[in-house]
Length: 435
Image (cartoon, rainbow, N blue to C red; front, side, top):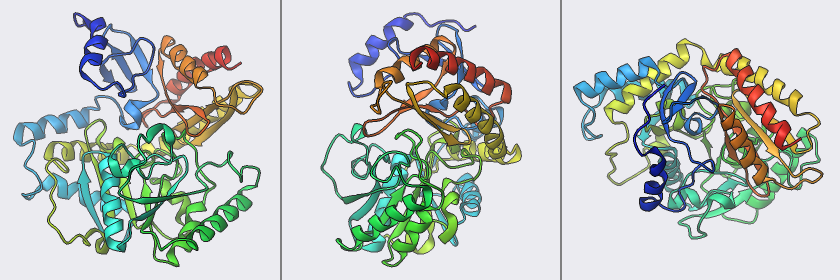
């Protein structure tokens, strides 16, 4: 138990008085998380929860991982920050590791403070390199909250403006079991999406790039058949259109089968640009872009980053990545995630309010509908979140056009026993709300 801070109940009022109305909070009675350890967190009243959302897929290895906290403390005691105007050993060390892991030949790495900023940078690089402001993006996608990344986000719930510095064209394929091609088998689905892409390219000037999440995160953990983006790349290459893989949520082994989500679509080589963030910092603000040297070096104006690559965040990310690799957390995501996915599929079979249980590794989505219909049920999703919280489990939610989904993405060190514990809480909630 931890001491509850005085006036914890008043924090919501203070929050509402000084922060934007559009800054959403989970739960009818919003939760203040005061500390974490391993796969658990504690609220300000001392109650413990099993964390199946990890600060939106950001606590990738474990809460308060000793190797990371030690690296942060040691680096902060020496020098927390200097900017990119000076040589920075931790930044170079991490860039070397990521370049080697990226699969991109002659890779260069630029560090940012978030996934939004990483995608911003990727769009800047692609449009400059290609001398085009046209971007292809996927329907149901999410790429960030800045002016440019909102403009390539294909999810109305997260796109507050139609104004844009880019001309964005949206492509079919990110959602397998909804839309005009949902009834096709995987091969026919891929062929139809490729034909649609080819037709679209015949009507426009050659775009700069396609930006795509291998698994759509905010959209509800949806994904196309393996190989779709490889087939897209063959068509894109005919016009020199670049492929940006947004790995902000899928990178670092979360999907279990692969270290990067794009590797499920590797038939025509790696992406031209990969963006990353979230899990690599394990809670520290780290994002970045990996690209071939000719693309990364195409800018002809000065540029720096004040906080991208700052020493204390680089030290944290290095320690976190080392732990991830040495403990084969990708393999753990595959094994434990596979068990969790099959357990949830079995327990949800026959529930009229559950349309689909999907995912891979420790990235699992449960799509909810109003029983007897194919209509989204956001009220049920909110109710399940309340029920699981009452049972000591934290999960997330998402969804796109006319969909509502629960999102399950625990730290990659989740044990089989913890997976069983969380699944039991989630099953009880689903049977009560969606049964």
